[in-house]
Every structure is written in structure tokens, then in C-alpha cells.
Image (cartoon, rainbow, N blue to C red; front, side, top):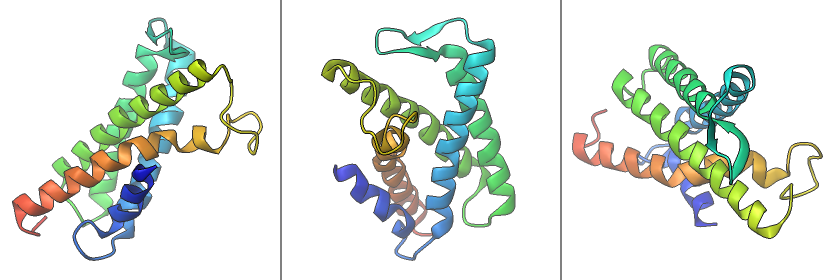
Length: 156
């Protein structure tokens, strides 16, 4: 679970605590998951990876990605911490790697022969099912922020 370490490092990516980054990363994951579900449920016809997660659709993935990009753009307009292109890249990272994290968690559950990864949150698949996206995406987000900070020498 070293990914959780990266999750805790994200707000300190530039040496100064910035809660905006972690709050917006969590918000983007929520937006991606919610709109992937809504778009997929209403418009989904093509399965994303049916063997791993039979309810996920390509349309749902694209819908989640689009709404996450919109969220990233709006965040960029209302915060002054990063530029619009950087926020859009963060949106891409959170959507793509968040979805991959969710698919990997689904694969683990299929291999273990369980429906939920816990019973603390009945009907939601357990705590790990709620956090799988952010836990998987956090190292990639942190790496991106470090690279951007290094390249720009702290001038984002």
C-alpha cells in the first residue's frame, strides 16, 4: 500500500502544503466515477472490459473523462495554483488512472471470488472499493507534479 504514501505526499509536492491539489484530486475521482456511471448506465452499449468488470462501458469511460476535463477546466478558472493546461493534464491522469485502478480492483475481486472488498459500507463494495481509484492514481499524479515542479523550477 505504498500508494497511500503518495496520496499523503501530493499536498506537499512543491515543499509547501497545498490542500487544493488533494481536495481537487479527490473531487475529480468522484466526478469521474459518478459521470462514468451515469453516462454508462444511460448510453452505454459497448463493454469496456467485460471479463473484468461487466457493467463498465466505453461510453461511461468517455463520459467520465469528459466531465472530469470540464471539472479540471473549472477548477483552473477558480484557483490560481496551476495553469489551465496543467489542470487538464491532472484531469486526464485522474480519469485514466482512476479507471485503471477501479478495473484492477475488480480483477482482484474476481480472482478472489468475492463481490465486495469489505462489509463496512454495505452496497458500496467496501472501503477499498471507494478508494481504489485514488489510491492507484495518486503515484502518477505525484510523479507528474514533481516533474512539472522540476521542469519549471518551482514556477507553475
